[in-house]
Length: 130
View (cartoon, helix red, strand yellow):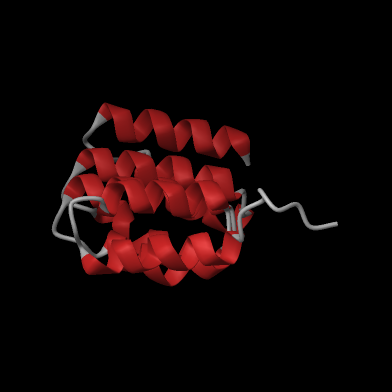
C-alpha cells in the first residue's frame, strides 16, 4: 500500500545529498536530515561533509554516519579520530559506538588517550556500548 502523503525517501536522500554537495548555507541541515533518513545511499555525500573545512559540518557528518549505523561508515569515520577539532573527534567516537562494529574497539581504545576529556568520555561510552 502506497500512501499519497508518504514521501519518497530516495528522492529526499537525493535532494539533501545535492544540497550538501552544493555547499550552501543549509549543508549542516542537509547532513542532519541525511542521517535521520538512515539510508546507506547517503554515505557518499556524508563523506564530503567529513572532508569539509567547516568543523560544524564535519561534526554533523560524523553524527549522520553514525546514525545510519552501517558498517560501511566505519572506514569513513576512522580518519577523523584524529581531527584537529575535539568536538568532531568526540562525535566520531559516539558514531563508532552507534554503529556497533566490534572491529572499532582498538580505535576507540586509542581514543581513550586523547587530550580532550569529552573525547575520552565518549570513547569510553562507545566501548561500553560494544
